[in-house]
Length: 250
Image (cartoon, rainbow, N blue to C red; front, side, top):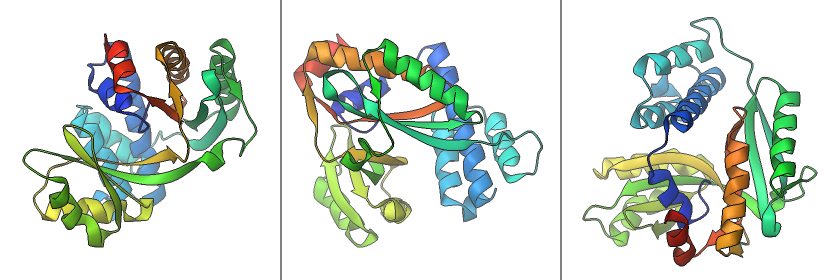
């Protein structure tokens, strides 16, 4: 789960097992390839590629794999796949709205795998636009808290187009329009703040509060979706209290 609850933030801190780490690496490599293809292979002139490479390095993706993906995407090296972005929409357990973002070289396979995961785990695929209107694309920059206050961060990013600063415990999250995301990152870096992540997310306009049983059902569905190599991200409008999050962790 990405970007929609403190549970997600906590969950991502848990050490991934080898199978999940391998899938995560593969998805990051795919992102690098696509970024290089769409914006060129020079990270200095392609902020999206620069961000994807930095994220892969933080996740300990081997440098050789990163470089080969960059070269395949930019055409410097043969073998790049024709990746296509596809978004599926639907509902999970308890009426939770889902956006399922795929990056695939086979639309039929992606559609089959997404539909199978949804059907077997209490979800229903919807038509295009059925839940998309509930979400807005948002730029997210996270910065390590350290000794910083919320005001320190706010002052640094106000003129860069930031919209909101949220305290997530060990980090501050700065939201903006996706087009301002890199300017926000640069403003934070210029102040010497340690930027931990830069990404685009989909944030819901309304949320569905889940109890422990509902959270477990939703997580089972999301795990099944993310088992597909074609699925890059799953976004939901679920909301999970700190009490439920603690029970999930236990």
